[in-house]
Image 1 (cartoon, rainbow, N blue to C red):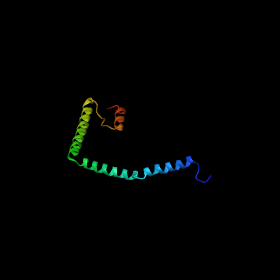
Image 2 (image 1 turned 45 degrees about the vertical axis):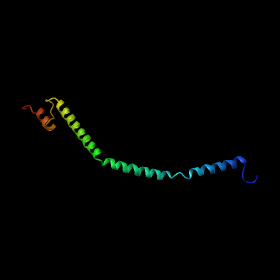
Image 3 (image 1 turned 135 degrees about the vertical axis):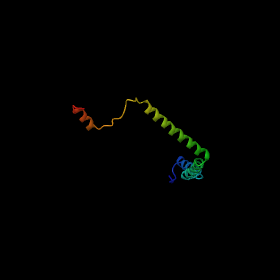
Image 4 (image 1 turned 90 degrees about the vertical axis):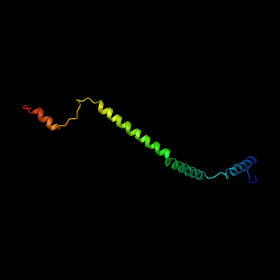
Amino acid sequence: MDGRGTEGQTLGRAMAKDSLKRFEPLPDPRELRNLWFASLSQAMDGYMRSAAFLEWMRYALRVMTETQALQATAWYGALPKTTALPSTSLHEKHSALSDPNS
C-alpha cells in the first residue's frame, strides 16, 4: 500500500471535500438569526406604535374592564338580600349566646 488507502477511500475523501465546498458559501446561521430578529423587532416596534394597534388596545382593555365590572355586578346582584357578612366578632357572638339576659 502506498498510504493513500483504497480507491473507494480516495473517492470518498474527494466526495467529502467536494460536498464541504458546497457549504462554504452558506452564511453563518447565527448571522441569519440576528438579521431575522432585528427585522422582526423593527416590524413589531412599528406595528405596536401604530395608531390602529393603539386604538385596538384601548378598545380591548375597555371591553375587558367593562365585562369584569358587569360580572362583578351580576355576582353581587345574585346574592340574596338576607345574606350579609357578619359584623360582630366571635367574642360578641359567644357572649350573646352565653348571656341568658340577651
